[in-house]
Every structure is written in structure tokens, then in C-alpha cells.
Image (cartoon, rainbow, N blue to C red; front, side):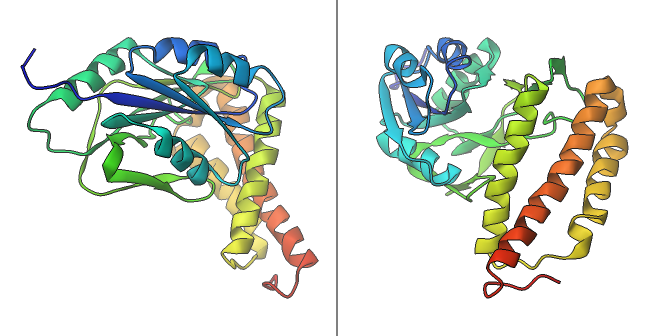
Length: 262
């Protein structure tokens, strides 16, 4: 251990109706200096109580978009570094050690780090068509980044980023009911974003585009190697694209003065 002062780290967790996931998540981030949970005001389970028992700071906020939720948590953080995780994600012990090591290096080349995600979808560990190629920027110096983007939010980083070797374990979409609910929720947010951005609707958005998404996931990403769960994941991912664009079309039909469909 060098004699320079160890940097501190804050873990930021967003949670809405995550009573079943949050205890496990809090357990795997107990090594952090500070744990902040931002609870969605619409939560109607025990999420807030669990957060107050296990986190250093809890805030309840009305959801507007994901970037704003994460930035609200960021405002509360005091650590030199922040690590963003979702309630259904678990940093492995190896990842925790790696994070501690990289932020303690005296001559760090980077102010942020991308973290691999390992997904369990519908009870199966995905190796091909899930999020295993995702390397989102999840760890960064608190004063060097903030989130942008309403739906698939990303970190705007003031400086260079590196990549960590160890992964976040992501237990997503545990069953079909959850999958359908998630598709419905996200497609609504995406359709609203299309409308806000003034995007046009085209007939191929609901005809050709979903087929392309299925082909890309199933054949190019080798989703067929993820078994029956892989087929269902690829198919429903394609269906969600059609739903997203159809919802966008409905918004246009209701408000034709905003942007016309074609």
C-alpha cells in the first residue's frame, strides 16, 4: 500500500420496485465508501425501506428520464469516483478488487472506465445474443462526467476512458411477464423520444426494421447458440422494435401538427 491517500468511491443505484433485487445488490457493493440509492417515487413495494436499511443515503424522486435520475444521484455523491449499477446488477468480487486497484494507481491515464456486462436472461446465462458485448461506461471520476440521453443514457466524459477486465453480473428479464412489462415500458419512452426529436415515421420501421434486428441478433450475433431462450429473446427484441415505432406512429396520428407520418 502506498502512502498516498486512497481515493473514495460512491456507488449509485437506481431502483423502482426492486425489493426482490436490492438486498443482493447492496450486499455486493458493501465494500464502497458510500452507497446512494435513488428510489423512483412510483415504487409501491418495500424498495425504499430496504434502501434505508442498507444504503448510506436514499433519495426519492419522481421519474422524468434516466439521465436525470442518475444525475440526481450523482449530485448527492461525495466520493472521488462513482460506480453506477442497477438493482439487478452485481459487481463480482474480482471487479470490486479491480476497481479499487485502478482508482488507486497514482498515475492513472483515464478518468473513466467501461465495464463488461454478463447477462442472465430468462434464467439462462447468455453468451451470444444478450448484452455480453456491452461495455458501458460505469466508473468515472465524479467531477469528470455526467449522464445525457433520455432512454439509453450514456456518460459524457471529460477525458479518456479505459476498460476493466472483470464484469458486472446482470440478472435481467427473469420471466416472460417481466419481459413483456419491460418492452411496454421502454417502447413508450422511446416513442416519446422520437416524437420530441421530431423523427419521421416510415412504413419500413414496422415492417423491415424488426426483421433486420432479428437477423442481426439471431444470425450475426449467433443468438441461435443461446438455445430456446435465445430464439425468444431475439424474436421479442425484434417485436419491441415494431412496437416502439407503432407507438411513435400513434403519437403522430394524435398530434399531426408535430410531424407527419409517411
